[in-house]
Image (cartoon, rainbow, N blue to C red):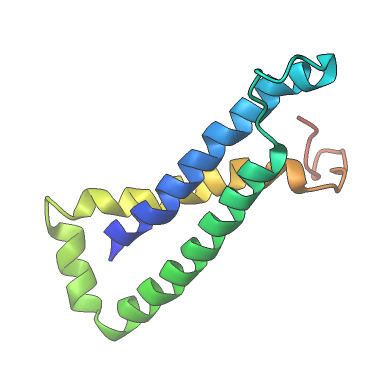
Length: 119
């Protein structure tokens, strides 16, 4: 089952490429270049992030059900040398989705020793 997390991982990777491309093409949009300049809208990476998050939640729920219903099968996958590297896709996908959603959070962090520091 962890290999199914490669689906949201690849969609989030595509969204990351779109996010980097959109921030790179924003100066062209501001300069109003000619029609031959390819401009990547911000909505493209936002759609990819949303789709990846939906798939991640679906596969997370299904994997949790499998974990509680068949723990021996999950343990066998964890020990298997061919399937165990797929478990890394779970956390990598979560990090990519967090990177894609970071700019969408509009709350200003509170400062202080026990609060979140500004980046």
